[in-house]
Length: 218
Image 1 (tube, rainbow, N blue to C red):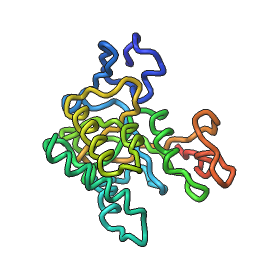
Image 2: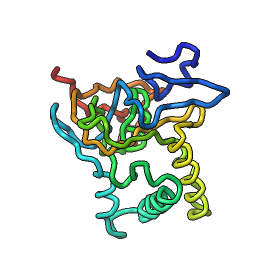
Image 3: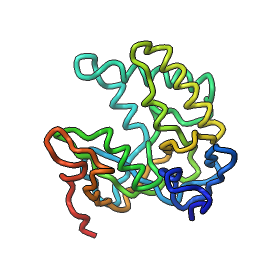
Image 4: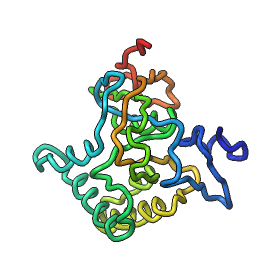
């Protein structure tokens, strides 16, 4: 159950695992506990029981050629990886892990970043195949603060903040946490996405996030 002393606006990524609030810093366990609820955002339909291996994000990043994608994302992740090896080599690499969220609301906000006029990502409840695999929390919002006008310097600073907080488990108050794990994950259920304007922005096609999803047959 969420800590009753933490205001709802500070619980965006928290569900039923222990959270400690102390002096304006949100402490989250890095390796000694697994969140009770895990959500996976994917741009395709997945069957219940499907196994998602770690590293899909990294494979997609590394497989793209300059003419097929924005090279800045590749550059960003390579800098993030270089800093991880310097600051926290014991933590999962973003290029080799599964990215998860720890609540429906957090997943809705993460999915919003992937939404376009042609794409409405699906959200799935998942479970870890190997709960003992290395894992950590990262500050999803930090990556959004990159200043493209001074790209290398800004990404380096962001990466240092990201991995420093991930290694201690101390994330910024009110941030949107993401859960990185080297474990494969198993799809348990497809989550229906309600169309609320305050959570789901309208896409270029005029549809809200999730309008292309189908009702959960279960």
